[in-house]
Length: 346
Image (tube, rainbow, N blue to C red; front, side, top):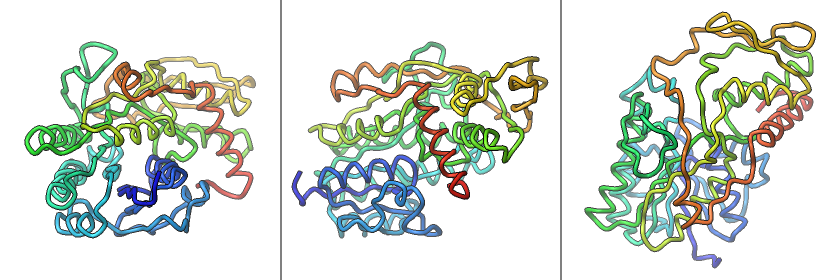
């Protein structure tokens, strides 16, 4: 890879942005990573990956909802590829602020597409879309041909962005692709997400720092993969001559209950579940309640099963998920144990 390869990564300080930026820098790209105007340019993820202050990494504050700012940045850097990962990323937050989610995820994507059309029409844009665009699908697994029927404001905001990519590709000939991402986790996941909430709780309980944790719907089944595998696939998407849509998923479904049981086992705590509904609890070998259900944490709408068919990505991108649920939970729990032992969480 030559030094002329220039990547714009929006949302660089998030989980996917940090992993992708590290991969791009390792491959010789020059990267401009954006962060929220109200947030610092660096962050704990860049520090943990050892890329903060890298010679080929520039940072830029950007609000994708600002069309003029998007156009100015693209015109200035003329990127080879744009990885649009920024936005409102929490389903629960979208119920509290539906309009904000639509603006951040939908309108922000349109602004970047228009900036590319005006100033970098040869660049390949890769959007981080979401399996939430399928809502509550009638059939599983879901693939690129599955009808979209978003049932949350977050899903709708991602569907707007996803549809915009397809429209600008068809109407204006842009090289624009959509990565339909099923749940992908890692050591760098934000603590506000249920997976990291679980692994951090398992670590703190194992160390005697907490006693229990409250969860919401543990029956929901999701397709859990490992984030670095998914960002590698997004990089492969950007290298293709034409844009397209790709489901990125492991093809294996596990409930939140399964994830919690596996994560606690990785911390040395064997759980036994009893009861049902709001009265369900998980006890350790000594009979102590370690997980309880809090109905306040239930979403107004929650798809019972999301599991993806990534056959197209396997064939065309060489996508191959390498980390199963057990290994994923072990990596996340070990990282949280190390952080807690070092004096506090990230």
